[in-house]
Image 1 (tube, rainbow, N blue to C red):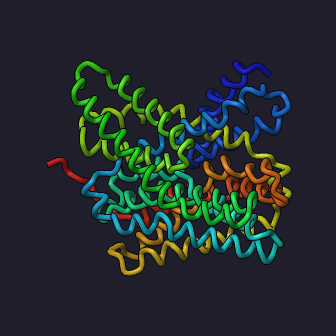
Image 2 (cartoon, rainbow, N blue to C red):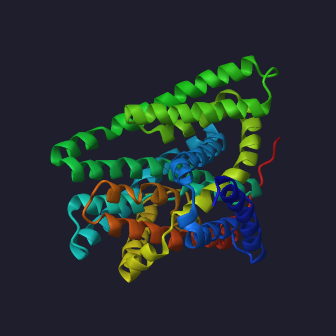
Image 3 (cartoon, rainbow, N blue to C red):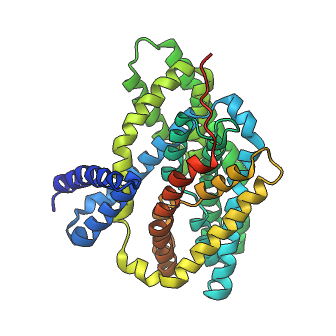
Length: 398
């Protein structure tokens, strides 16, 4: 199969399958994901190698669009309103899930602690590709705006990924080089978070100044290109410096909204259009990465591990929001919104296997199974329960 043919099949087939899913009252991304699974099942041996070379960049680009949209959708006043809860939501549920999965893998699957930690924090990342667009839609529709529930989930889910990825690298280092590297990696977490946010802040300040100075000379589309290009560069710099570049991207969007609001609204509109294509590519690629034989191998044991993690994460969410201003219905909705997994699991699932980790194949199997199981479950849960658990509050401009 030529690259041209594959790209057409991915984009057109992904769009058609998404529309078909909507006809059956299912989220479009479920159709896109299953289209990717079908492509992989029938044509995987015929895929050109270049698509797998491009896959990490394409996924990273889609994630950049997601996090920019998240940052551009969070106002300072709103963030201050949910600030403490959002910070706690960014790490407590993640740590609860990662720890619970690690324990069950250590004592029931006979993993080493390093392998158990890798498995735990691969699963502990909630999917921004699923959660961010869903929450932005709910905000636009007015659901939960009184207590800013979608914003709480937006901020918490985006930062949750930074925590999960960072802790995964800690346990990967432990598995490769032992306790000395583990301690060094653990000590680097505050550095990674602070420097990553600082880089995003500086980039946001510069772009805000530049766009305001040249507002009428640069078209909105050109502004979007510059922001996406800056974000790609930020990811590269973050990889070299070993800092949380994803947090920096979201921070950059937040600063743009705070310092150049008109520009931010232009960018949000353009990125919304970019997301139409990015969403198709991302979820079809996620589906293409699914190996059905690998999913079958994970079997019932994999489901037990995943369900244990979800239960622990749910407890973490309820613990975080205990005695907060959010009512019980809103807390339950936060539990549901924190279920979907896709992006990080697809990106990290194969790394332990490639690194020569003993139980790498089992880790990959469970990571893939988590995508197949939690993505439709979480999406359908968000769509079905949002009108039942969240009140509508449309903000007026006046």
